[in-house]
Picture 1 (spheres, rainbow, N blue to C red):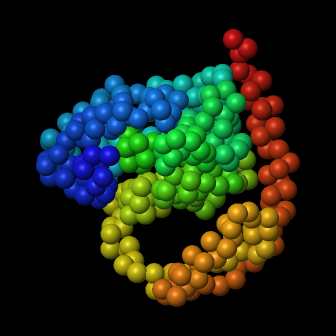
Picture 2 (cartoon, one colour):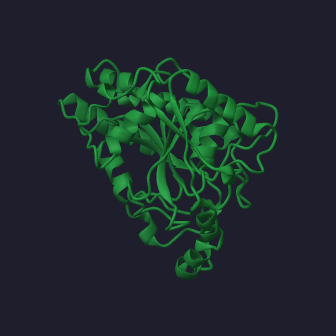
Picture 3 (cartoon, rainbow, N blue to C red):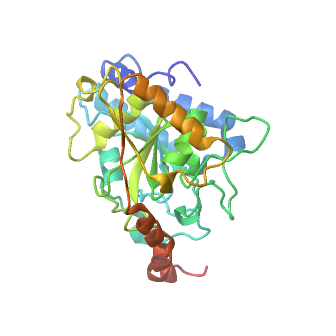
Length: 323
């Protein structure tokens, strides 16, 4: 990744606002990174370099007249292919294009576009977001970029999201999370991932796997970038929120809840031990660690497994033409 794109979103936003760098320069470096790695890593189902250049030029034109459309102006961003984005078809990882209503911007993407971010394309995903490894029976799976020799799982269902960050074609990646579909690819690819409280962000304009559990989510290369993006897009905070004044400089007082055994039973290959070791280290560094029982978790999991996807299929996929 170039030195320019290795910088934080905060620094890049400041430099673009001061005219020190151009959004087009960021876009060109993102495109060059994808040209170098994209064919091998396969992060995108719809790679859109011309669209990215158009977005960047619009951002630069606004900067040139002193106009700030939002904190994400000029920031390269990738979008999971279950988010509607006007001008892009939506497949949600399936081989068939979904009906036109799934190509109308919802509030999340509308806000991103209003802020004049640079959209680089749509990323690969597990078909209809139902799976955690990243595999898609129709298209295969993006490669986890941390292993240059073996084709390892990038996590799913937002499988291309984390990969787009690692290859340097995006600084912000949009995913969705039902049962860890943002958190898994973030952890598998070494990025930060946020799943939000249900209904904190609207799911309008997003192909829904589970009305009960689905939330939009974001991935970024570092927590600072994730916090910056969240503050820019969150409807309850507004783009004027000064997140820098709220970012803690240590972990004293940060609360960590330890869920009951349902979340730990069946872990393999030392996963539980590694997680608990990390929690112990955070506790010694000043975090407040407490038990947080979630007796409703098993019931919620049963609801998820009963197949809200089937209801989606019956209601929507019947309308998709055979050809």
